[in-house]
Every structure is written in structure tokens, then in C-alpha cells.
Amino acid sequence: KFSLKYQIPEEYINKSAINTQNTYEVNGFDWKQNWLNNIEVVILSICTVFLAVLILIFKDIIVKKHFLHSFLRTSFLIWILIWLGWIAGGQVSIIHLAAFIQALYDGRGFASFLAEPAIVIIGLAALVSMPIWGRALFCGWLCPFGALQELLNKFAIFIGIKQKRLDSKLDLNLKLGKYIVLLLVGIGFIYSFDMGLKASAIEPFKTAITFRFNAPMFALIWVLILLIMGIFIERAYCRFLCPLGAAAAILGKVRMFNFLHRRKECGAPCKACNPICPTQAIFSDGKINMNECFQCLDCQVMYFDFKK
Image (cartoon, rainbow, N blue to C red):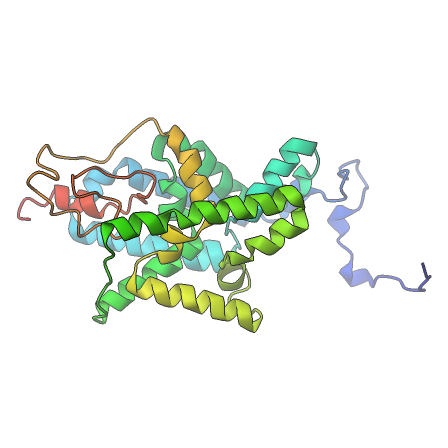
């Protein structure tokens, strides 16, 4: 131990964290005041979730007009990437899920978990929506890194880059990868939270979204590899490696409803929507694998397109 004569400069002290009105939390953070200080983020986050829910509720009206669906989808993803991700820092990650579970387990840490309003609102919306849409609301509509991948892929298609469609068996096998990653990261968190944090470095969220690419070289290289993969295979990271996506898929099994329309001819003889599903979530027999469906609604656009 050693002593150091040092006093924190006044401008670096968070006044809202000082106990003046008995609002000081056990762990030293007044999350309620922090939410009040970021009321714009709170309101816009709630509005963002509400808009995503409205799109899914009124999807039958939207998908009947191809241009309307395309415009809304692209515009919303741009909003999610730029505002929710890069400005508000609302990228939920496996770390937040682990912190939440740990807080439930030991009863501490809720104040620090509640420190980021956008993440709390998006995360709670994802959990509450599980019985209705499964993983689709978060993975398909509210994930900034997912939005970044999809927007880059749309641009790649626009400039003529040919997409790689995997063999169905290979695709299914690769999709098991994210569950293996989730298992390994989960074991890391169980052993020690610090080890779990190191294992969660496989997530590109911090580099691409939270730090806006201002990160160490190795982290940048990893993100670039994932984004380049996503140019040729839409949402490659989400489909094959994302531990948070795997956790969402497992939690999404409580889904009690299916709002996606199908016809009796789907899969036999018609296979029109199988090749247009960007995540290959539609089997050759016409059934939809809801664990892999992000409800981009492309198949619903085709459902109402009587020319096709």
C-alpha cells in the first residue's frame, strides 16, 4: 500500500452521484437521476420500440406495397444504426444479459445495469416480445450491428455483388455454431465474470457500434472480416456466430403465435419464397424455421404479390 496526495479535479466529479437527498445507491450510482438527465434518449428509445412493434402489427398493410416495405425497412435500419447504435449507444450484448442474470442471482448490481437507458429499454422490449415474435423484434429490427450488416448487404446487391447461397445442410450445421459460442461464453461467465468478458470479445458490437470503429487493430480486423462475410452472405455473423442471437433463439421458443402467412402450396409444389429468404430460414418443404427468422417480411411481400 502507498499513499498519494491527489484530489480529483472538480470538473471530473459527477454531482448527480453525490448523496445529498438519500438517493445514493448502494453501489454508488443514482440511475434514476441519470435517466432524467437523458430523458431524450429514454423517449426516443421508447418511440423506436413502439414504431418497430407497429410495423410488425400492421405488416399486412405494409407488405402489400413492395416500395413501402422496402422504404420502411431500409429507413428504419438506418435509424437503428445511426441513432440507436452510434449516437445513443443502445447496442445490447451478451455482457448485458450476463450482468442481468448475475444481478438476479446475487441481488446486487441492478443500479449499474440500469445505467444505460437505451439498452435497458431495448433489452426489456426484446424479453417482453419473446412470447409474441420470438427473437424477431430484437434481432430483426432493433439490433444496430444487424442493421449495419443488412444495410451493407443491400448496398452490395445494389452494385451487383453476387450473393452466396449455402447448401441447406451446410447452412443448418453452421447455424449450430452460435449455440456452441454461447455455451463457451456462458461457461466463461460461470467460471468468472472477467473470463466471460474476455470470451465475449467475439462480439463485434463494442468495436463497430459502441466505439464506432475507434478500437485496437485486432478488433478492427475481426469486425472487417465479419462485415466482408456479410456482404456475400446476409447477416453471416447473426446466423452463425452470435451468442446473443443464440440466447434470443432459445428464449424465443416461448413464442405462442405465428403471424407469417403461408399457403397450402408452399413447398409443394411452390418454392418461390425459399430462395428469397435472406437468412435461409425457409425450408424446401415450405416450413419456416422461426428460430432463424428475423421477420424481414420479404416472404410476406411475395405472399401478397399475385403476379409472382
